[in-house]
Image (cartoon, rainbow, N blue to C red; front, side, top):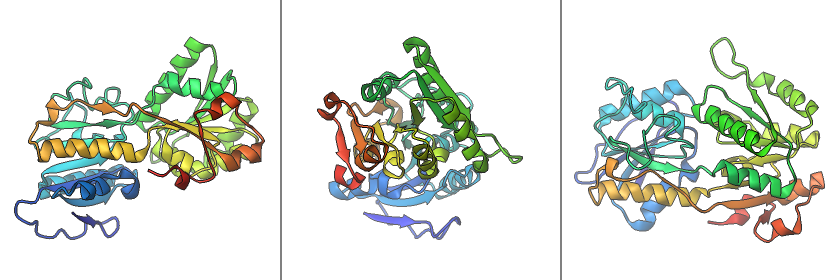
Amino acid sequence: MRVRRAPGPGLGRTARPRPGVPRLHAALARRERRRARLPRYVEEKGLPFRLTVRSADQDERLARRYVAEAKALRPDLVYTWGTTATLAAAGEFDKVDPAANITDIPIVFTMVADPVGARIVPDVRSSGRNVSGVTQTVPVDSEIEAISAYRPVTKLAIIYNPTEVNSVLKVAELRAAGAARKFTVLDRAIPLDHSGRPNAELIPTILKEIVAERPQFLYLGPDTYVAKRADQITRFANDERLPSFAGVELVLCQSHALFGLFARYHTLGKLTARKVEQILVEKQRPQDIPIESVNTFTYVINQTVMSQLQLYPPMSVLDYARVVKSCDELGE
């Protein structure tokens, strides 16, 4: 397998495709080439795919540009990472714009937290169109149980980007869980600047407001904007002795979150690549391949942060949790 990468924010040059070799066009929400795991699975399986990678880096304009590029290049399949990139490529299932969205090339997505809520598909059993994919979502009840197993929770805080559909959906889920389980959700959206983008300069102010409310934990979920700033956010929170819970692997591994429960990226990559194989090798239609979620999750505790905060879990949690100093210790 040959992997081509764009030389920066431009479109780059595209080599003449080899006859008979399926071409995959990957549009990633951020620079997640290593974690996407698709190239590794393709190599391990010896699949004859040629992969072109484009990283939109959470920029909707770049995402739209790469979608236009894919429409012009006409690869055999488009692979998207994240809700933003997937919506740019596929559009909402009942509001597809053939001029802007991809309608006649199979799309396989991954790392979309709620494809039904984001209106990418009407039902996980079938997209009803040229789309299939994988979701990494951990059920919110499982997340709350994981948090409560560490310490009882009466107040749970979340900071989020209000322009990301998946983040808004997650806040709604947490509110519903809070109402059912009798805990308060302190949800704080990052204010937008004059251009309609989140204003990162206001994050410290929001965190100070959150700390003043004295929640037990800060929840960091499937939010690309927050994930990119998770190191800054968790450092501040730890200084205020506010431990953080990570709902995705990236946040735990690139921040100072105390613990998390999530689907492993390599598992997501294998499941996603299997769908690519079903479409390109086995010639199945995307609409005949159900949207799947990973059904095994990993509970991980950051040993360094645990010691720093002197916040140790009950012995019962240690029966199933992985306690690590680095995510490298998790292996594959």
